[in-house]
Image (cartoon, rainbow, N blue to C red; front, top):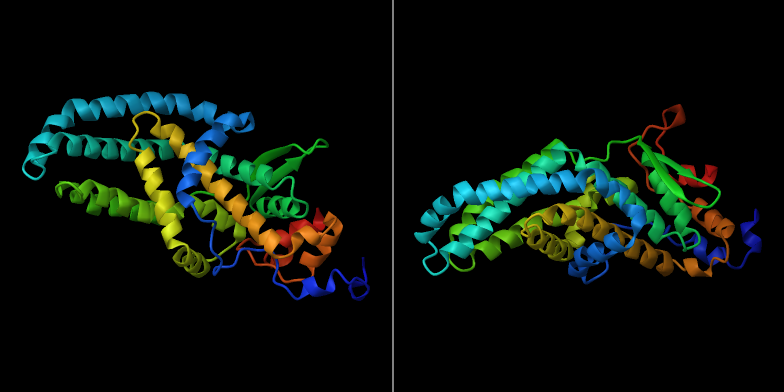
Length: 322
């Protein structure tokens, strides 16, 4: 294995780029399916449930209170104002606006309750479990996560997530920007008939790329690389985000859908990773040792994490050591 020239299998693969997502690559199609797929996946896999228990019940009760309060005190004012603009459908438009506003308040409350931590845990667990049976790719997924947080793997192959080394949370300026988009675009609901649909689509357009915030962090991409990748997949993110916004209109269950959407985003990333791994001819690697040697021969992407000696770390650093 040490002599690459003697292996006819390694020579043609060394010249290829590493099986790492590139900004010009396109995500899998049918992105609108993944938020729905995330619901069934989250329900079916009990290993993901512990991340839900401590947050879903209290936040669902809070959601009941918020939705009830909004309808009790703001329903008639909304109907009165919208009657001036939505003469055919003022009540339905008012209901949509109140549900949207309630979902936003609930989302803010969820962030205050540190729900984002549980969503990140679910994303990491789905990424690990989804790549577990793909030789070589499972090592890459483990190494990516170990760059940003502690990861313990026991003798049975079970994975336990530890403390974060890099903050996984959305930055304040990104949250503020999304809030401004919501405030500026909410008046679109005053437009008769199609105004509400336009509002939901615009919100989906803005929020879609946020579903892979954690994935971009694991890849170690800078802002420029992220923007290039998002532009390449803008329509796919738009469809994903629009479905997410529609799910958020469901009272009470919108809390659960916050977690299921994160699950769907992770499943989307897993399918993308598997496709890239296959495109690189990875299925020709018959064992993990050979896969490791091939990937180790190519410079990996760098992460904004300071490593030993002051140099930058990468997922490949952990691959080689572990």
